[in-house]
Image (cartoon, rainbow, N blue to C red; front, side, top):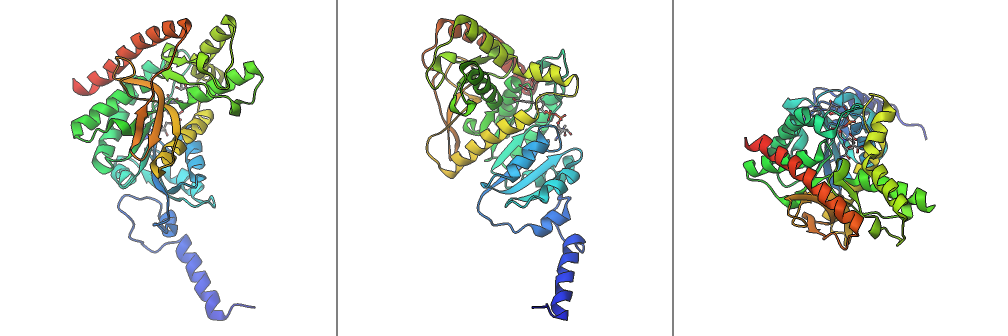
Length: 357
Ligand SMILES: NC(=O)c1ccc[n+]([C@@H]2O[C@H](COP(=O)([O-])OP(=O)(O)OC[C@H]3O[C@@H](n4cnc5c(N)ncnc54)[C@H](O)[C@@H]3O)[C@@H](O)[C@H]2O)c1
Ligand SMILES: O=C(O)C[C@H](O)C(=O)O
């Protein structure tokens, strides 16, 4: 049946209002009226913000989070290019409503009401650099963003990706303590890329499908602090000493392998976005109340004498509700643990001092 003349007029009016919204009163700070125009709000799901959403990790991470059915609202914040990335992602025909936020003046609007905040903001390594070489710039970025979180969404779960994770997590903790909002269960340093790599490399050696392999990786996220527990691989298996040394080194140097291959164009972005989404999805399932959600993360910990340590945690409605012990280690892993703890202690202290002094 042909639409009547007045129906056609109404449809055209609707479409043109959508494409050229007439001075809509938007939430203060939101830059993308078209996306807001479509926002229904109220759909079931979680509200997620990505800080650093226009970057090498941020863009594929935003795309993958837009595909996650647990997400109802997705806020994309960056100091550059947030409007373009938001316009692009917002055309995907998935459920989440996407809104873009550009620059410091819109940080509060980006954060208000969020359940989960994922932070991949900050500079990446170039060949020859350590993750610690990023401290000078990224420490200040993380401090500013965490001050915003403390003010606007103090109950949100925070997934911190920005390097050096071994120092940025203690920085975030100190910022939250200062603001009186610190909940150790809600601050998680993202180490899932180490697990993703470990699963892949171990599967290669064993001739298995990586999806069938689970390698716990503990300690931290830099060089020798990345400690794969090959004695605890599932399915149970054994390695020669040569295989153990090869795998441990390859997992510890996985980031550097990518940095060198990219020849100055940055570090891991696509595999990181994949790993970040795997971890964020686990956090959202925990928030939803799913039972038995377990993943490795760098968290406040009593597993060793250090205040922070990466190990398996159980994710629940309030964040990392249980931090698991390391389990039995072999001699090679015990030596690795001592080395990891030495370096970790310094990196943690550096982060704490950055805020306290
Ligand atoms: N935890 C991990 O396993 C892991 C893995 C890979 C990379 N990383 C780290 O993630 C970070 C980002 O890497 P990348 O490759 O996406 O870098 P990138 O340079 O491509 O992107 C970083 C983004 O952060 C933005 N940004 C800078 N300052 C900001 C601020 N104050 N507020 C909001 N956004 C800001 C930039 O504009 C840019 O869009 C680096 O520090 C990198 O070392 C961590
Ligand atoms: O290696 C880097 O600098 C980025 C990241 O930490 C990684 O492990 O890929």
